[in-house]
Length: 315
Ligand code: UDP
Image 1 (cartoon, protein in one colour):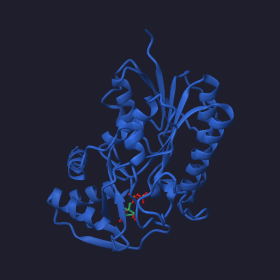
Image 2 (cartoon, protein in one colour):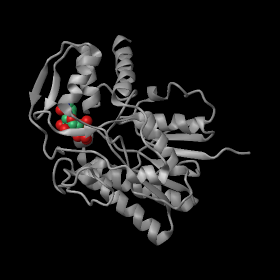
Image 3 (spheres, helix red, strand yellow):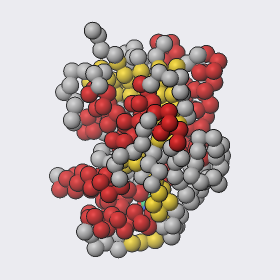
């Protein structure tokens, strides 16, 4: 029997590379597509010699040539605020044109596409925790808008293509995720704090550290993405995927210091514009529709993440 092919755009990224690995383990032929802006070839090290694995370099904002696939996971886009704000016009194009190009391919092939959307759809939320029915509180012209509005527009496009053209699609809204294969210079809070603590540099708190986030370990996230794509119940989402256990950024800093045994200090910096004050997913829908909930508590996930960065710093 010939194997089914899955394409993962953003496949060389943190999340994408874990998803490729899972798909190979599930018996797929996998094509990772990535422009290597934030993705890295070394993320493929665990499976780069697998004959079912293929890497194609390219940019989803341009017209792309890819082998026909049954499934497309559209993950391409820098996800860390400093990286997506570096070239905001390209970020917007990656989100919107990228979704358009990949959805058009899916439609032409009769393939299924999963769009990686984001908790940023809720902006700086006035409803807490955030259910999927909340329309959000997003600044359309701020420094985060290229990502937030880009991802929102991509959701709109896929929904319209689903309703109007019968596109077989799924939408997941990914909340803060962390784990091995994040870049040391990713810029997001978990990698920043862990790397700073390991180097004995002060941990950079933006604002007073009272803002909250809910951190999901990468293996839990990959599991629910796979479930969402596999199920045949007609459930298309959008569905929140993330860990609903909420921490302040200050609590995270203290936990990282405790777990690394670091005597690094805390340093306080201005809060970036439009930084959401609170964030926590309501995952009722994922629980009921997909029978999923996260299994890895923050301490356990941090342990693996710290070990990963420690090994990288010693290499
Ligand atoms: N943050 C921080 N120090 C850092 C990086 C981030 O205090 O070195 C804060 C940031 O202001 C935000 C939270 O941590 O309130 C999560 O930031 P991150 O960039 O990880 O993701 P976001 O959820 O904002 O996209």
